[in-house]
Each structure stands twice: as C-alpha cells, then as structure tokens.
Image 1: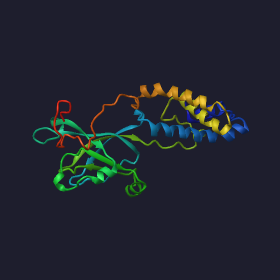
Image 2 (image 1 turned 120 degrees about the vertical axis):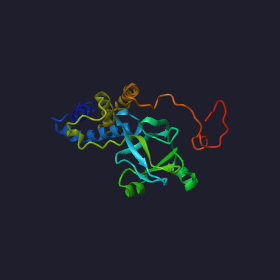
Image 3 (image 1 turned 180 degrees about the horizontal axis):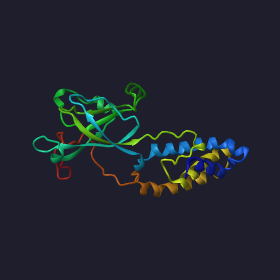
Image 4 (image 1 turned 90 degrees about the horizontal axis):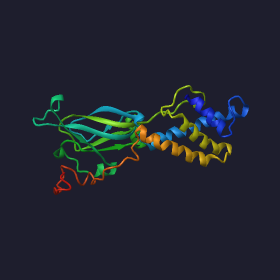
Length: 250
C-alpha cells in the first residue's frame, strides 16, 4: 500500500476526517508526520533484515583507525574476516576460520594499550557516532579497531541502514520500506489519536504491538531470539592469558 493511502486510512480511523473534507485535508499532513515516527521506531528499535546491508571495508596497515563509516550507517550487526591458514594466505583457496570482531565502547577502546608491538589480527572494534565525528568524517562517524594490523585486512561489515524519512508521506505514492500496511495504519492511527483527542489510542497501540510481534519473528528481527551467554570479550579472548578449562577452552 502507498504511503498516502496509509496516511489517509489512519487519519480517517482516528477521527481526522478524509482528504475530501476540509477538516481531513488539514489533518493528513499531521498523520504523515506520525507515520514518520512509526517508521523511525522500527529502524531504531529492531534489527530488521530489510534494513541490513553488507559491505567490504579495508583496515589499513599500522593504524588503529579511524575509518569513515558508511554514509547510511545506523549501527553494526557484525564484522568479520577469514583468518589465514598455514602459509599466511587469505585467497579463495586458503580461507581459514572467520574472526568476528567484538564491539567495545569508545571509552574502553581509548583505554587499550596502543603500540606497534601489539600488531596482530584485530578482534575488537568501536564506533564514534558523536556529532564531532560525524562532522569531521562527513558520514555517520568513525570506526576504530584493535589491535593494529601488520597488513591490510578486508573485513565484511554487516550493518543496519539508517532509512531516510519520506518527503510529505501524505501525498507520496511510494511503498514504505516496512511493507506491512495493517500495522502501519493501526499504529499511525493510535498516535494520531493524541492529536484528534480519540480515546481509543491506547487500545490501538496495544493491538498494533500484538500485530507486530509475530511479524518481527517471521521477518527476521532477533530481539526475542535466544542469545548465547559468554564472557566479556575484553577479559576472556583467545589471545589473552586466561587459563584454559574444559568449560572455557578458548
């Protein structure tokens, strides 16, 4: 369903009138703004597969960063590269086990000992998404990694895309990137109730959440998926001096 159709139906449901009436015509731009907030919540709160992007980035030799992030970057999903097999090659015929980089805060990244003597295969990364970093990079911010590399490494970066807002959704004939129309209508109408004074808003919001839950599981969001419990990456890593045990062989 088109954006303008979703806006109109939500506006009509929340006592906002329709496009044919003077009252409805005045209210549809407001409903369009509420639809924008609904789509914003979806991209900020959930790791939806429809927003996942895969890119190749190269970590430069002899540095901990920074590297400018992708222009549409929102947050990282994961980051990995193949460890070389015996002989040191990383060509298609000699790919080893994948090395997944673990995320750190910038504070923890800044606290790490940084010296050429620690050069190795990177296993940590951090992102600086501050306003200052965004202005300096001209993108979403900077990427840092640890330790520095002794040779350039091509990393597969899977991240969540920051979907841009739609321009005037109340007159836009595009199909939204989240294409479950019933949820968008219900949740937009629930929020529109705050404008029109409709007391059904809370009930509709609960119905919209119940409608969204199975859609997230089927579409691929992993917020409710089981998670493996593991030790803190900066304290228990395969290159650290942690004593090996049967329950923790790495």
